[in-house]
Figure: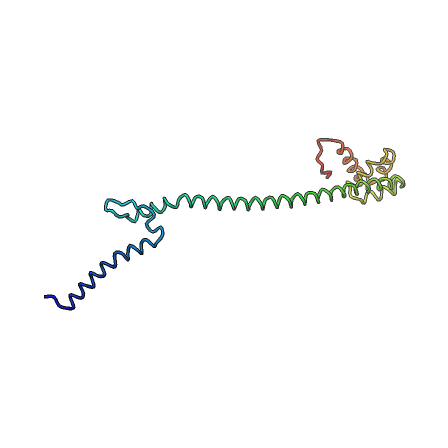
Amino acid sequence: MMTKASGQNTAISDLLRRVALPAAALVMLTIPGAFAQEARPSAGGELTSEEEIKQFCTNIADPARDQRYLLQKQELEKLRTDVDSRIVEMQKRKEEYEDWLKRRDNFLKQAEAGLTDIYKKMKPDAAATQLQEMRIEVAAAVIMRLNPTQSSLILNEMDPKKAAVIANIIASASDPNTSKDPS
């Protein structure tokens, strides 16, 4: 015999079965894309963990590659912008340096011409004394710009060792095989 309590439990169970199946279907339909991918069942009808991993990796491979390429492209564009800005800065500094070098060369030419004119008008013994105290390269440049008669008189008044060094510098200035360093 069935008791009243067991009859109520059976009625509740039947009611839950009738309501639960449509409720579960309704919940599943409201989840967008929950069953959008078609599962490839294994021999038992369900995907194994390894098959799920393979399927997941296969599904995201192309978007991941595209994203990686996009990130690499953005990084390259950033590097290109950085390199371009550095090139502009280097070009600016090059122009400043070239301008400074041009002004320096002009000054040196004017100074050498003026200095040569000063030594042209000096007595050989006074010029020799002053040129001995100068940097040897400057003294050689001044003596080389003077006429041969004046140069020989000044060299004759100088210390013989310094005069020999200056003569060697002047001689090597015309030799194309000589290093640019006069020392």
